[in-house]
Image (cartoon, rainbow, N blue to C red):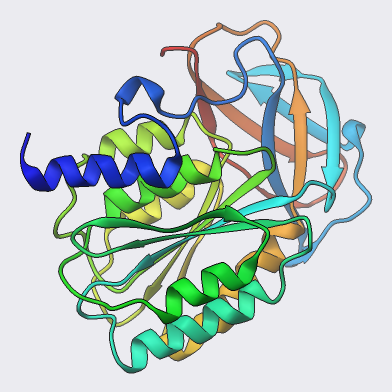
Length: 288
């Protein structure tokens, strides 16, 4: 193993607070227990409120399931900020990113936790999950951009950080370019994301090339990809993501009549309404 690869593994492990072994990757919280899914329900772009378990129609691998649990704006959040601090994110761009971060930190509730994973050609655990948002603000103020872009490695680290404590995991990934330095394979990290409860939202500048990995990561976790015209717009994007995530329901069901392992396609609908839903398209259970 090369020195750089060793450092990436170590940094990822430190960021997650877990051993740097593939078998210690996060596991989707299901097995024969409750499957938890974040769902955004909207009508004409407005969130649908007041839904209960009987309002959701869920199929797992084509088999109808009974929703046992629904919560809305009740569970604390684990917000992980995974930020590109490569050489291109300097000067005005860094100032915009820092200001946008302060804006989203100010909107966190007292029970929410937040963490920072910064990345260039290496992944750096800026700060682990904490209720002290000032820790994250200070870490960003001390940031010195440089080097290339390890986008895939950083996303993996952010997933692990988000899953390292109880709560709903929201990962916000910002990058102003494509991956140029990751050690991990994109397909492997996407596979790991299918085993977690984390929802990933990605943000990128519209005028630059964007890695398809970001779009796929958002789709596989039930999140969304945001494109901004300029880093000046990052504040509005970050705040919009946090507000949208808070409007999502968390539903739970115990899988019945489906295989214990492997890929489980999910379909979530709202009964009797022309609502649009956004949720992860499925999950990987067991060792499949």
